[in-house]
Length: 85
Image (cartoon, rainbow, N blue to C red):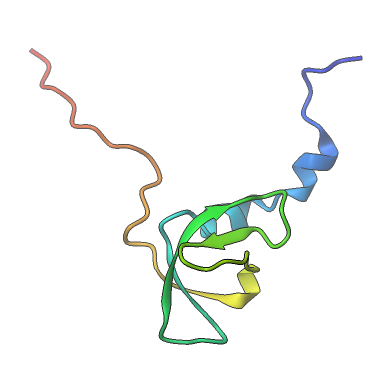
């Protein structure tokens, strides 16, 4: 049995587009409470619902949220490169 391969069941369950749309740090509001902003704390792909908000005790579905801003989101760490000398 080849254990190096990706499990097709797990891989097919993950919505990669959704995962990258709801990155930690993204500012959202609950559709049921417009005007109150929350920051996404984490996205747990194998959990239903998958999105945890800072200061909110329960996870949320993407359909519960409206994305307000991604300004604070840092996708990768950027470091200044030293001049080649």
